[in-house]
Image (cartoon, rainbow, N blue to C red; front, top):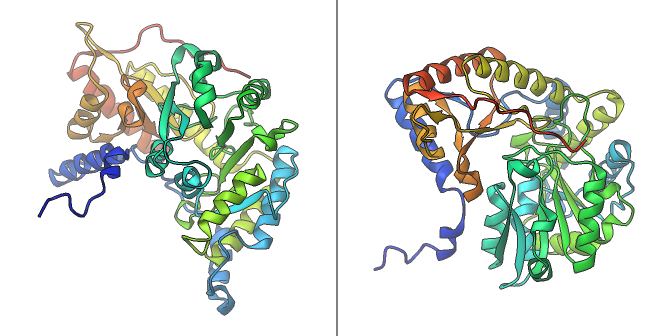
Length: 414
């Protein structure tokens, strides 16, 4: 019997291999007695606020929370999501037709292509980009057209660099601002230009805004749906995983174009029964508390403080980095060896785990444009981050690695 008899060929096109490989490196290092500081996977290291844990406990104890939920989402949750969007972005979304509850935004991103495209269609995807974008396309038999995110354009899509033929071929385009692994920022004029181009070629814009509440220095990421008429040609994913430390609860939502939202709702009605009711009611409490707060979400202040202290410690060790204005990630250019040569992202990531006990993700895990970079998740307490920087410094000096001398902070769009 063939060894691949029970293994689909489409699995070869999914992008989880490097994450599994990094997991093996961490296990190998720990087996050798190394204390690993894990700055690889972007999972919040803190629990939800006490009021949310209490609400989840109350909801879980109710006997009426254990029936099948609807796949579209609890009416109260969808209304609260609509109210939060109006509060946060000043936009009006119809809870019945323009919103859909999700088991985290990854649920929707994984299934969207199956709902709105046909096998053989083409889609525009960022490179580097979050792996589920390409995985969702592969599962649907859709061909990716990758557009590069490069330092020269502040890691924003170069709309003029996408050819007319590519625009005409694409069914949809995913953008992720601020994003993962790069944390580029953009203002509304950029999104206006993007939507104007998409409208010209009838391309649906899919905006992944999972990090909307994790921004720094007073900046607030906009929603693409703030632009008049955007819901005619765009949808937007939101997640409570990072904003409220509810990653394990798996709760998010999709907003925007009612045809695309309805298509995904119809697909999900055939494959799942929705999010646990207790979790949806906890999410309602989270969104209500955020609306009542009237100030910067605590998660933004937390990660800004971590960013500042970790970046300062890295710079003291000779590794110059560009400060992100959002997200829990640093997208860092790999230093060069004294002789002018550069390690690959995979080489330096493995050696940093095995020799320094610091886990990061190699940039090529996110696409070929990611080579030359590593992604560092600031998901540890500040003291632990400083220790990680000290270890990295010793590692760099041991191998004759020099800093990116003269690297300046890139200009920002707003």
